Length: 321
Image 1: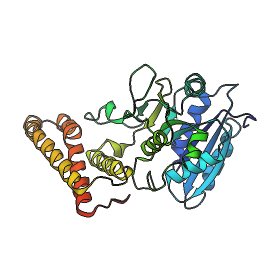
Image 2: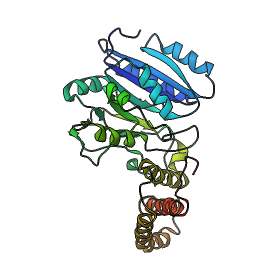
Image 3: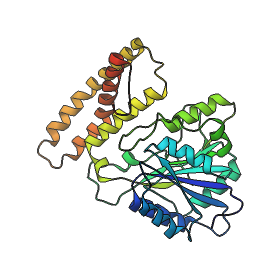
Image 4: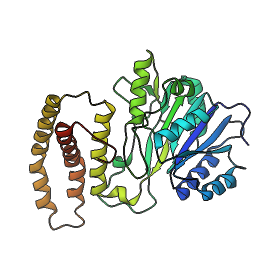
């Protein structure tokens, strides 16, 4: 049931998440409208096609304008690029396979693209909990790109997130797509490919319009392992390393040493507060205040110090870092 004329191509790249993907499909059914000119492309990226995914796509193909394509190898950027090449719409909308869209998402995406005529457009991603969250874990820790209730054009130092990202198809193809050495790869966490794409677009041509639209919102699943300090430290480290890799390692070792010193000083400034929280929270369980302080005031500095130290020593970072 794919429309003859397609204005919007929604692309979901998936890697072994059938349950989450079905929830995503159901949210798109609620968001769908009778006159929407759109298509839905599911890009499986894995070592081999999963027959169960084919069955799921077939099950929903009567309710959604679905098409399934396969990218060999677990690489999110490669999958996104294949999705862009397979798309027919004037605009492409990328959403994560473990996200669920707002009931008006499709309508707001299509109307927003026509009203603002952006090169990029996106909106907030709010947390979606399906398990109980710990007391110390705040919604803000899992909220992405919430920039207020008014739509606006982003400035040159602001970027949109990839879990809810709309791009003019002609632009992404002319840029050669996402850098495939960046982004998620199987079980390896890595980021930065969306920011890199937006930076390259701004360098590619003047007047690139990156539009924030709060009406275009999704809800992103917060899995239980993400609500642990261990995962948060790993995520902070990966974000810092991804940012450095996205800059193509232009920083000299001297600049790296200066940043390392600054981060060590910032960490030292926050140590007295950490000790105070330890004393105050010592006899209270589950130590929520202590954990929140570590998340907000300690982890990012520790992660940056580790990344900078390794960069200065080796000037090399990889997805497996």
